[in-house]
Length: 518
Image (cartoon, rainbow, N blue to C red; front, side, top):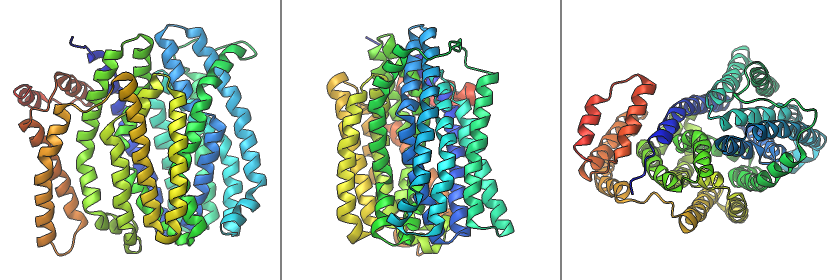
């Protein structure tokens, strides 16, 4: 039986264009801030900021208690059932919980700042960093939760305006002013905290002036039953997020503990570059979660399976050329963006890129399980892979430095995604591996290897200006491979039509070509 997913697919594409735009712009601004700090600050100061940000991120996860994902899913799920009263109570309960939790976590960080600083390097700058970030924690967590509320209503624009653009743009501006006026490292830290405060206040004003299209609660106290249900659903996500955070940041913490602080700076030049690889995956996931949650509420599981196949194929297709450029030419990328002293992280960059790309290859597995309510399984996989990651970092970082940290992270990412995708298949028969998905990949590999080999033989010094050319070449090779293997589906035309409406571009000729290969 043919499954019709045109409407939810168009909804995902529409929201994904907005979310992707924000993600790309946001990551560019984050990356720009990293580059500016690496250029303006010393490697030690850059390492201190990176370490402080890790601690801030960990405590924000604790403060949020899994609610930033739980609230988006629950709002979408009960909206799909038409229960507006429960949606309203969920919003109020979440805000009450987060205000208290973030205050407690911020106070703990402030009081323990000296102890934490001594555990790493013991410098006064690190102590001050922890104290300033303790103040910013409250606003950081509230910003994330308020954005998650709008996500539950399929609103990606709020995240784009306030979390992706405003917050990061303000920080870039503060770094620029600091560099021009030759201000101290403290000014950079203060600018980061102020960017969180302004962005959080902006979203709060929006929520009060233009709330989502739901009746906001007016009762004095949150409904106890709703609060309990929300926490039961979200607490496994808290544990999952904590261990996922350990997976994400154990490498930086291990480097800060076992190796010189300069290794932290070099590694955190390679890491943000690698994190560009899943940017499309994350952009689509932002709107995919509420859409699939509503399909699950309506028991449309065949549509979910088909949605998974199509979204994975598109995410992979648009990410594959970027992956190839980063994994085949890491040295010119690092040298151009951060400077020649960071080129020693080239191998680490390659390893990290492979690890992040493996998730793209398997698709939106975790988002799908979350939409289906499998929070306990996600918690278990996060715990298991994080413990493996800790063990690998302890074993590899003291001996191998940044390469060991990269190996530990990538191996753990592969293990995590294998476990999550296995659950998708074994319990729900959800997977992306159709002939139309795999055949173009296999056909494209020989041509890519030939081009890379010829380049290495003929080009003495790899230039950054050659990389955009290779990006286009790799995209053309893959597109031709899709044509040759007839790797297009009927739904692909709906995706292209959605892009036409959203971008205002006519893809008539492209659609005419594709119809010949369906």
